[in-house]
Length: 482
Image (tube, rainbow, N blue to C red; front, side, top):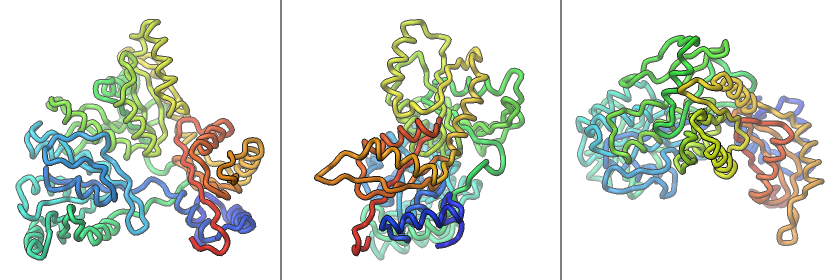
């Protein structure tokens, strides 16, 4: 482990100095390298799980993530708060996008399967296509195969509901789909899932190496996200229109244009569209589900999430979920409070109180008060996006970080617990986009103390508009292997 990549963000000289410090404090060199490498990875690769209703996708997702988190019910139309989960197999982490639940009768099965499969495939690095081996390939399955071929993403085929030797022959018939080897599994009993996941890892890219400085290749990518009818389309139209130039439109496969290249403030940006959920989706449960799936897809493709909040409404649970999705995905964040021109004094007063209480988790995000309808304060959007990107890409040299940590620990030591007082011994920033820190400590650091460290990091170094990830490695007792 001595190539540049394994050093995370550290140059050779800084790395050597850092490892010397670690050895003095009694840390195992291998453990330190592993911690830096783990924290220094860029965004995790994304696996989309697709297939028609009731083939066992959510059960399989639960198997993959190793806990019962995706809702599993026989009836279609089950809505869930989340559609993305983090999973680990054979020491590698990746994200899973589950397209398990929807309103089956919204547009007919074929159309609804196709629509959600598209959203998920768009965000994914590879796809896991689940087919019910006891039924065989149906017309709907064939339709999904066409989508997968068009998308050109790597595909692993899971022949589900194979509970014993007799089902192996059923699985073999799925070679006819032309997607390569069908992997016979039972998501219910776990049979065959190990081989399936080994194949998934072969198809998924490794988590990208950490890159520093400016993004390479193409315009910066911005997702406009927010709950339905919050004004995403209006904002996009306002941003694209008037004296600004729409450079071109990149057509989606079977939907409206997905991304728009728009020139703003002399710079071309790529706006990843999350607006226009299909108008024909009447049933609320289905619509909410599509909204979540589409938001997740857009956020995965973006670098900055501009979250729109409708100021004429109370800040809702759905707003909070969308904010959490953006923060957990590690994107830069800007909050745009829309319809600001429609507020009277009383509503403005109560809104400010709501923002104080409900928006605490993103108090670090730049805020713009806009009107998509009138264009009010639209000129403030680009500086806010640029501020968030700058925070997202900020890197603190290890020497400066450790001087800061030393002062912090001296002035505000960790509370004593059980007669012991854990101390932060040293740390490093292992990655950016978003900033990721590894702290090495003599004992477990409580969540409250970690939040305090994050707050002080922000006060000292800015980090405006970006989540911060802090991981802690505790020094192992001498003579005891990890």
